[in-house]
Image 1 (cartoon, helix red, strand yellow):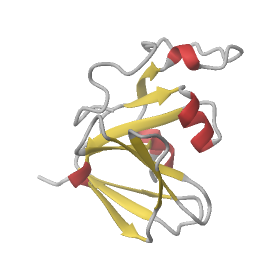
Image 2 (cartoon, rainbow, N blue to C red):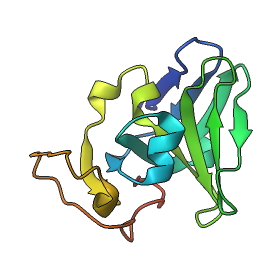
Image 3 (cartoon, rainbow, N blue to C red):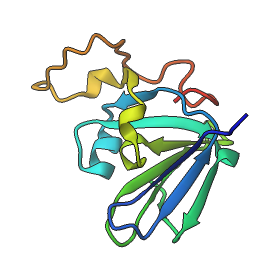
Image 4 (cartoon, rainbow, N blue to C red):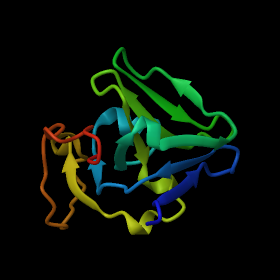
Length: 142
């Protein structure tokens, strides 16, 4: 039985990572902190056990974006790579867009829907939550 291996990295290629094991469906986050950190209206994340995530090239910079969380990014190009929360020790959220094949990981919900831009209209029929769901930041679930 072969193990799932997923790789990804930043825009400039200075930081590369690998994730072993299956990736759960992603979640589209609309919170203001994700918007500002990525410079995007939506950031799609997947969550895995931190032991599944390995930096294989370079070293990401770390920014404490709040008392409860830190974000990993490339100091050369600024790509947002990952997110760690003290509320969910042992897991790490990875930006789906930085995977080499993000097309293989569709999202299955929206979180912080109430924080979305009011002029953004999405007709994707995914569940929409005003915060995290009980399963968010759980191993095997982003």
